[in-house]
Length: 415
Image 1 (cartoon, helix red, strand yellow):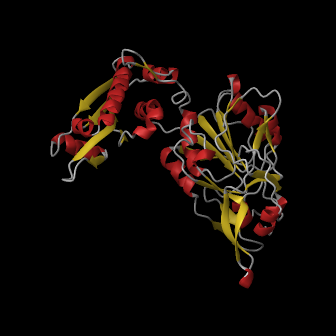
Image 2 (tube, helix red, strand yellow):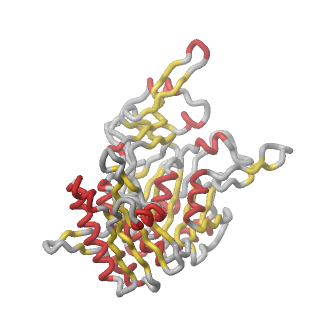
Image 3 (tube, helix red, strand yellow):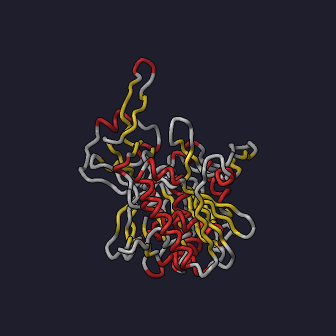
């Protein structure tokens, strides 16, 4: 991820097309820039200093928002660590209320078993967890409502998300204070949204099913798919999501650059070999022409990306079957990677909670001299990695040959 300084702040660059879940979270991050980046400090008096992004959000609320913290005292009695965490959550919520100029109202509720308060917590969708063998349930969640009865919840405050507590609360408040869904401008050379494709010469066009990622985006955002050529991005677009761009014209590249320069956020997905395109080639595409790149933009932004190489990793290689008939073998395919926790940036909300991620034929990024952006990688390989010519995987890949010729460089790659 690259967070541009000054006018270029908000650019996000990601390699490969296998991060739909991370992309979804990344969009939320970009829209609410600043909510997760601010430091949260516990003072000697037990008060939290909220980030500038959160303070700006609270000062902009123009309709009443009610937050109801459902916390079972019994949980803290049984597990003291939860009692300590609940104090932190309560103190932070009270700070939100104090900075909201009266537009945010906080209620703290102890939902006793079989009470109306417990019924209300369940109705909101909060998660009750059993605290003993008799099945008694306790609650530690947040339900927020606004003047039009929109409901947003944090079903349970999990301690493992403590580093992102301010972000989670601020996102909930922002969703209630700004019920209008943010607009995402989507551009892709792939049938990401189920666009029709030509089945072959003389055959009618076929309508594909939208990708899972596209369906998830449409549930939370107003997704506006753009034509392959445009000379300006509409002013109401919050995020520009460019998936597998191929042969974009100079006017389109200029429009994307101007969008970022004026403070817009862009997510650019590029690939040295799109396995999706290889399975469903686009009309007129030559075999093996499955790469995507925006070299003029990357060069201007201080990024280097080589669309003619992929990164293999002997430590992360996925086992596949290679050969045929009686010669069928189980082989470590160094071009397909199973990333583990140590490959993820644990300090960024996009990747902090990922445990595994499978990526195929991934590209890699580096920076150029004079780059003015803040370079924040999200994914990296292990040191047992090597650059591989992309042509070796684009047409008739041979996993056993790639493994036999593999010579690790000893350096991890940003992917």
